[in-house]
Length: 213
Ligand SMILES: [Zn+2]
Image: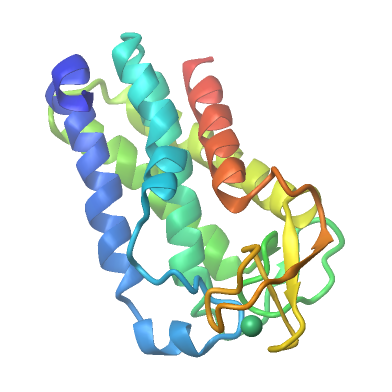
């Protein structure tokens, strides 16, 4: 749908997001696996994750709003890059709201390395769009849209997003069933309906809106 409705530039943006995200998930894989809160799903993307990251972009393509697609994918790219590279940061993250130190992998935790990576992820999407014949203004839109989306992602992650606690492992997780040990967890903070996927989808919506504006 992206290619059919958005043409080559839109496909370039999608490919830039997909290829760089897949590659970065393999950077420092062993170290990331060892982190207590790391993305336990690993680099594999399930259908909900795909919808959360690509749904808004696809809608924009179908609606004939390629700049919205760029912004949505830039937000997804910024978040993915920030997560994959930020997890490798030597300095522990701080919560975006209170600046309190939190364990690596905590939703809403930010590091300078992750922030820098989110710029790279956002710009990569705009560059993919421009490289395959899209307007050069996509670079600016992807930067602003992508960073805005990533900021919303972190803010929601630190405040309203559901966070669960696994009593067996004594660790926090984003899932109602702990991916590491498979046991049920209990809601510790936030809203049950505001899952990590829902937060990602909202962040791409913000990215699309800002890019269009
Ligand atoms: Zn557990």
